[in-house]
Length: 285
Ligand code: MBD
Ligand code: FE
Image (cartoon, helix red, strand yellow):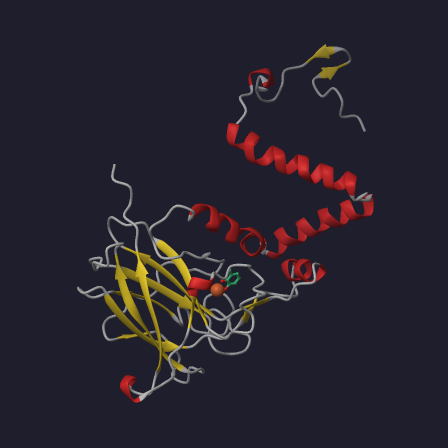
């Protein structure tokens, strides 16, 4: 290795290719010092306390390279940490409960026209489901022109998402709809089923090494937005799902677990899921 003094040639200084910053004038980013430094310190302590070996250190490096190369970085971060970010961000809120967005939101889903029917294949598998409810403010008043952006997996086991997993048409089971002037909405769709995050990639292997399965309980993702209100990103889960207590993304909140009303004469033979969203005004400037 002859990398030490790249600016010296037989004792004389040659011109640097680029101007080298004055590292004596570095100003720290206080937030990095506050958040990242303790994280680094904790990893160092853990290495010492658990006698981490070189072999394990190199395994960790190979794992991170694999996460990057596989494109699973957003998945890994969402599975491990997004629920904590959501819990932190929603600590003071008058809105109904939020939930993580996850890695599979795609902007620009079809803007539907009433009566709302989710884009689906002619032979879309799964139980018919009417997803209905309202969008109001904290006082129960309808929020004008509220837009719901809804996306969920299909009902093949395990569920898969269009635009992500291949064999569905683009934007299948993804759609945007407006609540009406009374704040009500109703969307005809199918009931998604439990989903596994990819288990053959590095994220799945890490979960497995930690003794965790890759399943998420069935869920419907919703982003609710309206002028003058904070966008609410959330998920609705279904009562009785076998993975509510062991969600691989740790993201279930009890208030978001809703019983599906079985098909009955009063709703034309379709099971019903009712949920009322409550939005929080944006802080006035
Ligand atoms: C999902 O569908 C999801 O919602 C999350 C949080 C992670 C992976 C896939
Ligand atoms: Fe999801």
